[in-house]
Image 1: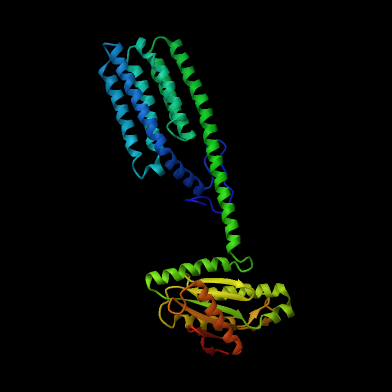
Image 2: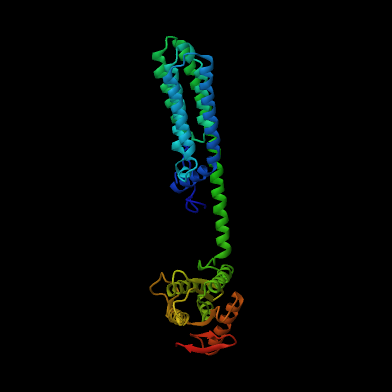
Length: 399
């Protein structure tokens, strides 16, 4: 999953009221994605809001000769808050913390409107109730604030309206009517915002599930089901990339083709399930022989391949091959969970092909390592040999 999304295979659960994800990774990923999406929307909403807020102020001045200076100052302060929130949308912090500047701008617009209504004469102030309804709708549906945060902002605006103006105005019925209208706008806008965010989050969860499914299919296609190691297809991809990197950075790598000795009798005598358990054990031993940056792959059947990159010195591949032969020639229990399980002793034939000095392509590496491995087989197995660009080199038998 992209970003800090939910761990693979873990269902993403959403709170039915707050609409947040129980999984912290999914919630963080959703917020960052929304921050990227909402950046342009927030800019448009803030610019439009500041324009309308300023236009209504000019209208007040045009139709009234006695607009109090504190009301004009309060309106100017709200515009400065909006400008500050607008500037934040151009910062890198907006993607992760976009809710705070947008909530501040919405809260400033609503409380500024309430404050202006408290300053203006009652006859002029009641016309602002419609403006507050517009603020409530904008906070819910336009600014990009999450449902729960928008609900909190608008509840603060509604309470401020009721507390400040019920005590300030004589026409209580008018104030009550406007309070009910504001409450109705809050309910309708809240329901619409809830549905909108619920749908956005549902779509986000569906994308996570689709991506998780694609990743599972990709892993199945590139991973050996028995050992969990990379399969031949993934090995070829990594080998081609490694050969290209060695040419570009002038470093050296090597491929080790490994074929288990005396594996067929394990299947014939103990059965295929026992053979599968032995292959799994051999895969783990191979991983213990190499560095974390190296690749151990199951090539097919009882064949494995080790890809070494950025070798530490000239004899590094031969040292790894010796460790591999020693590890795979140790007795291995048929059933590791049973202490009395019979043990089998096999061994390994290892062919080495270095690149780019000996082989210049991925196919050449595979062919050279395979030829060297067969030379070890012909010599009796349980050893290693290096391909020298035409024929295998000396076979080193270790047992």
